[in-house]
Length: 397
Image (cartoon, rainbow, N blue to C red; front, side):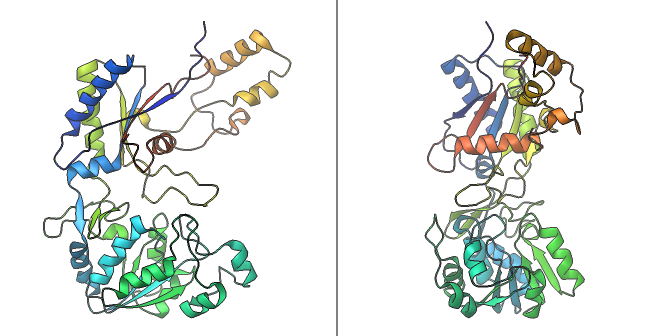
């Protein structure tokens, strides 16, 4: 009988991991219990995925707002400080803004993009922007002009007016806060030559534009806390990019040394099971919410570390294309045999071939990360470990 089930994804309930826990031993221990409880047979290329939060927590990779402020004071003490293109997030940015306001900068000029931030959180709708006659590529608004056009706007899901919320965060720490709205990074230079650009995936380009136009000091979020301050956590590659709120005064950073960790876990699993299991660390899954329009992509990368078997992109044929075109006159077992033969005969690199159109042109780790992020969720499911079987199988298996 032919196998009916293809890919199977399971979220595994795990302990509440704490600083100092040994994931190289604890994760395989969890899998041994899982294999026994569910009577699992390890497949030819199973995938184990661990959320980045678990890794960072066990590393103790945290920083306080005072430590971040001390890092910022190296460049910005006594200066009017521009804070450019932050995302509209309590979890991702509010604590960073508190740290900025806790520094010795003199005044904070906060420049927000509109109608939405980089990851799709909307200040206003496109219709509201059009009705106000605004051109997002040319126009700049003061806070008073923004309020004149749009009043107080609350986010659809969080119920927060982020303009008021961010301003209050700064002013509560004794700093003057001016808010402007513009999609040009150069606008901030009309107010100050000292800038933190807070965009995520466009950060290098933004920094170059500002430096080319004469900014005296520009730091992006990956330039902040990329080394320890007073024995703090740090991330040498991403700084405070990918950080999350831990407490009102502390950030959990994106994990370090993820590549080393996944390879060590893979080796330990190989020793215990005799099988090669691919291992990855995952963060945001890079998918878009169709209602809120939010891209789940506030982390700098989907996977900061993965074993070598997860490198590359899918190399797949589109079954419905084959069925509707090359084998349109076949049906039943004859059609199935023809499609299987086509899959078995496919080249190692199908780029550019018409039979691949409609397949997903993304890195394997980005696809798997989306699958894992949707499975584990971000709330109280308690399943930060994901086990995937059959992902690399196809119609012939």
